Length: 168
Image 1 (spheres, one colour):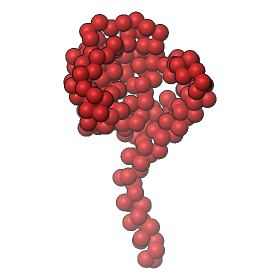
Image 2: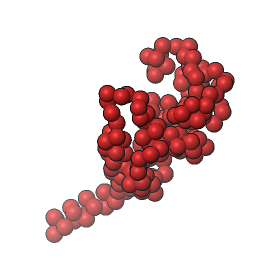
Image 3: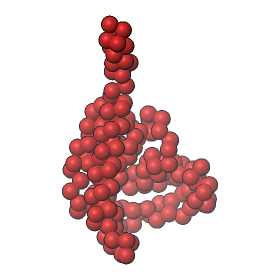
Image 4: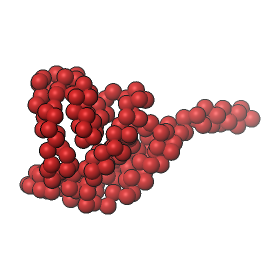
């Protein structure tokens, strides 16, 4: 009788944790699948050929994206899922959607390096380089956005701080 009561109490305590833990679980499954897929096509002897963006444009990452979407169903601000989807969207030229993903994570209070850098990159890609400079902690970008083979509209950066200062 005491054991049954302890099990019921334990389950009652775990139920509120299911959604956050489930979201982390699915986000991590997506990250593992994405990483394995990308690294499977990566050639360390030819560092930028293909580039990570080219791999993300060509590889079948639908399974990873489904895991990220499931994570967001359980927790709409799950930071790993949001930033990973934003990075995929940036590589594929879906700049507005990428910005939406990182803005949601940012609005939820995530101020980690990946979120900050992803937000800055999405702001630059959507034509907001000055706002991006604020996110990078003082690094500024020239206002001309160049066309190149990786993003279509990739920033040309001119940091005003060392990389160590910008990351703090």
